Image (cartoon, rainbow, N blue to C red; front, side, top):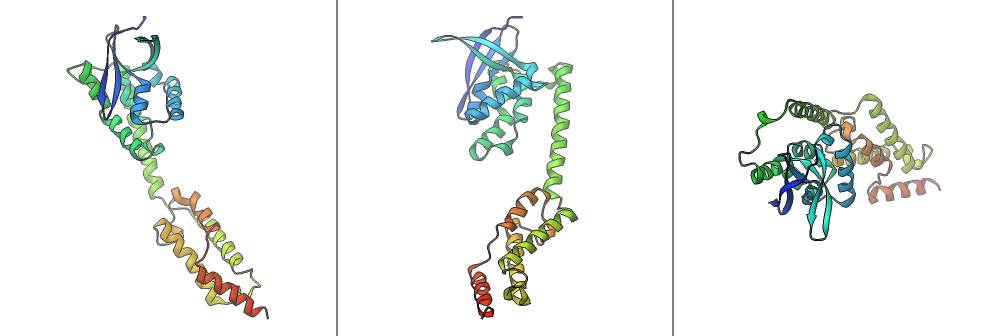
Length: 251
């Protein structure tokens, strides 16, 4: 069936305009570019979304190309069925954007469909009116979101394993030994000074990651933990003490 617009309008939402189109097939569509621009996605992010919605097994079922009349002539526009809009924006991870864009994305996830529906379908959205196929898509997506939430919770609340603890400890030992001038250096052989350097390292580490022991590093922070240790620099007073101590013992 050749789909063409019978009604189109710009619908104000969250400080921007959404292009809504009612087509001859009785369905309401939304212009994809207008959604991306309204959220505040950059050009690269917008192009990435255009690719995703046309390759995603579920979303591509709701994507169409519609020819719109414009002042400069006919223009082909990528649109999406309104019923697929919540599924699409729900798949955009808020953690991939920041600041105001993240806030706008969440608003689009929560409210954009209802605003467009109100502009064209005055009785609003009714889940029970959806086809069995579309209901199944929503059910699967909801299940995937629940799984993603559980995984994110585990990552945010699980601490590193014994092997990762050993890696951190090994990195810390290498850092302190290097700072003290090696195991043969006078600074290293002084147990008091050596202890204070170790304490300074791990105290700074614990303060930075908000934990009470490096052994309790969260799994999500481990990839940042090793570089932190490797690039750590002690306070200036400790550095001067190490230099002076080694210098005194050299003569």
